Length: 415
Image 1 (tube, rainbow, N blue to C red):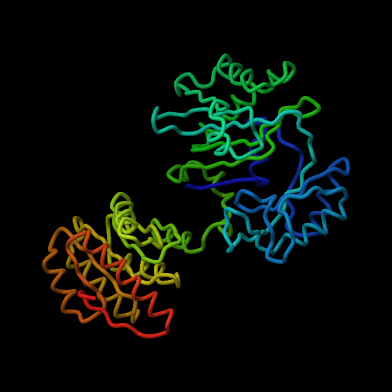
Image 2 (spheres, rainbow, N blue to C red):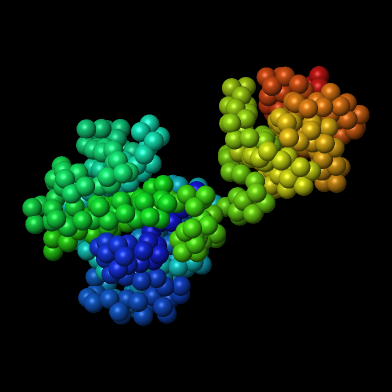
């Protein structure tokens, strides 16, 4: 899923004549000089500078150079230039990024608006109703998950019939329940309908505005947002996908996508190589049930070819935390013996020392089992899923202990 958040593109997309959604005036800057020029173009001396990093919690974050806060109030073009220099080119670390942080390549400088009221509003795809819903709350400007936990009655959920869209009556009901003042109701109704239009026309899976504000001048403005788009719609949403900033994504996940692999890094130490998303989820679950922790989600898809296996192993072994690799493949379209040959070739060419537990089920599985057992490599063929998961966790623990005391270790199935 392609994500776009807190950026110049968000503002320009919503403000464009086609949608006409209210946002504060501002623009992006890629260096200190540009930041000063942008600040000069904004009337008044009351502005906000925001690090353009695809992560939440920016205001409470800190940069790797020690600078505090990814969202700061500035009062002059000179101050905007100074703060931009502290942010651009450095990694911002927040509760969502972890200690690795995310690089800040640009800042967004925007006029400061004072909110009389702050609301939360999102248009989402709902699996239960199999259609869009509008989720809204009078408690905006804060973590919606916290609101849902502490005050669930403050959240309003409205299902939308895709054949009717968001009617005037529906939008007015939402705006009234949220608590917009009488003079802002019409603008709020229009904004809700326009956000739904963006959601439908741009193949979005999420349009989240937090906060949606009523300002002291009685304007209805989208002050911050998170926008997610369906990857499958890229062919017809080229204008949206051109905004994608791969520097804000994990480099390994980008590389995997380019190779046609579905890869997501996790915090564990057992690498997983699986074909099929459902089997991948089950593999991670059974590793957890046996006391281990998966290092990744990696689905090589229906064609687990030797090339795909090689690319998958490159991704898995690039993580220094990985102490064992669990290969769980169902050979249907691709035969198990061909998978085994590819696996053996990859382990040999990489001179891999990390133990590999292979569970190959399906066509020609007996031949695959024989090939692996006769290879003389650190590949252990196990038919039973539970036994394979147990062995993966066991091998992982042994490797971690060996690394701690800096000794080598030899593996057998009986270890």
